[in-house]
Each structure stands twice: as C-alpha cells, then as structure tokens.
Length: 361
Image (tube, rainbow, N blue to C red; front, side):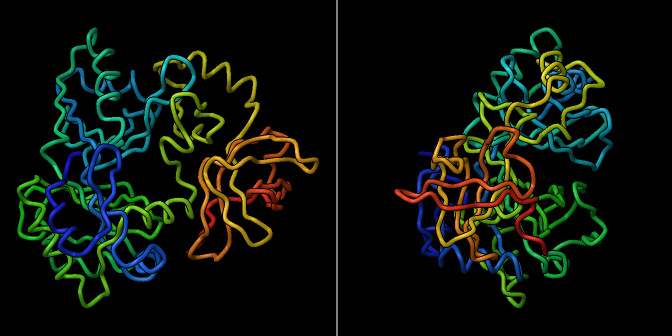
C-alpha cells in the first residue's frame, strides 16, 4: 500500500483511511454529508496525490498525444487544459484524463491512479514508432483540489496572481503558498468551482497547511474521497471503473463531445463507423421517484421486470435528498422523461431519466 506525502497529516486529523487504487487514502473526516455540504456552500481541500502525472516533451510530443487521445490537442495553447480519453483498439476506453500544455513542446497528462501503469504501457507502445520524450513523474508530485464557491476569495492571499482571472480549464504556473512554480489550475471534479494545485511532494505539506490557514475564516475543511464521489455524481461526471472502462463505448458513455474525427487516432475508424450506425445503448442519468438508494451493480428493469441494464454509479444525493444514479440502458429507454425501474433488493423502484447535471447551483 502506497502513501501520499500527506498520509500522516490525514491520520493526525482523525481521517478514516481506506485502500484506494493501491494508496492509503482518507475516505472521510467528519462524515460524507457534512463534507459534501462544505464544498457546495464554502470550500474544502482534497488530497488527490494518488493521481498519475506524465510529462510528454519534444518535437514529437503533440504527434504522440494526437495519436493516443480522442480530443484534438492541437487546439491547446500554453496555459490551457483539455479533457480527453485514451481509446483502446477494441472500442473501449483505456482511461480518461486531462491534458495540459505547459510549454511549446511540453504537455502534462493527468491520469487516474488505478491506471497509471496501464496508461504508461499503452502510450509507450505507440511511442515506439513516434519517439517523443516521456517521463512518469507520478511518484514525485502531489495534487491538492481546493473546491467550492469561496475558493477564489479564500486563496487569493496565497498568490501574487489574480486567481479570479484563471478561467475554467485554464491554468498558470506561478507562486502559491510560499512556493514558486506550482501549477494553479481552474479544474476540478465537484462542479462547485475552485482550483487544483500541483506541487512537489517535498512542498505539499507547506501548501496544505497554508491552504487550511488561509481558508479558516471561510469555513474550509479537509474533505475525503467519499464526498468527492457524491459531488462528482451530482454533476454526472464519469468515474473510471464504474461508468467507463476497457469494455464501454465512449460514444455510448456520452463522450462524443471529446471524440474528434478531424484527425487519426487509436481506433478512430471503428469509432467513426459506430457513430454512423448510432449507439445501441446509452449511459443515462436517473432519479428515483420513491425513497431508496440505487447502488452500483443494481439491475435496471423495465415495467415487466425484465433486466435492461445495470447501475454504474448511484447514491443518495446530499444536495437533492433523493436517490440518483447513472446506468446503461437500450436507446429506447434513454429519452429524457423515460420511465425505468431500479431493482433495490426485492423492490423495483420507479425512476425517471433526467438531464445532467443533477445538481444545478
């Protein structure tokens, strides 16, 4: 089990620690609902240093990224980030990721913790004929997510840069919490705004302490992975391993918006044919019409009790106080307002297909 540079800090704060993606991670401190509400109404700080970071450099860097990723990275400029995914050769998804253009020929790829080795091998395989410079810096860098509507105001004292000027999916490399040359990125996984801070492992404890100090009068709290999951699900953000994986179609998963057929990439020809045919099933969002909690793996059934799909993510929404979830269903059940049923133990609970996000600020 790996530790982040802040594991002892979390333990000293009384965090409940659990194994996650090979790391010893804080799942909660004071309770999921309380932490969830803190992020929605004020701000919280997450240690997400288990995430992986790859540097792709040199004159062949863009060529490699264009080959292995679905989005069009040629649209990036220095200081901009882009959501994308790595298609595999069989119609599924190796991983989803964020791509940052750091310098003219330098890109940072941020990947999911559970997929670091798999992603590295996949990209390296295609790099054999391209020849970009690759560095896996995952073990050396930490990542903090400072999320919530008060994040800009609370963190401004920690940087000489105007944080309010960093637009969504843009970033700067600058001073923060007394450390020079950290990445301050206006990205996140909660839907409540804020920043993600990339720094070296040797610097992260100082950054963590100063973030908590600067945010103390704004109600900041450390937040665990359980609330991170309820926050992301209220926005309908896909979680790798739940909603998308090596077997799921990115087009069925609703990732057509980051699938750019203006270039050649891994399996693009087959995906273009799939798009022309039309998806047979779709990942839909649903709300339960009655009291209940949908969980991952629960069956989705039609009015006659016939199984038509499975819940990929589900929870009791702290913000909406109702059961919400995602799941794949045949296309005929995917229209907004469609009625489906979620098999919760012996009961088939009625649910309605709704538009994302569930949570609207």
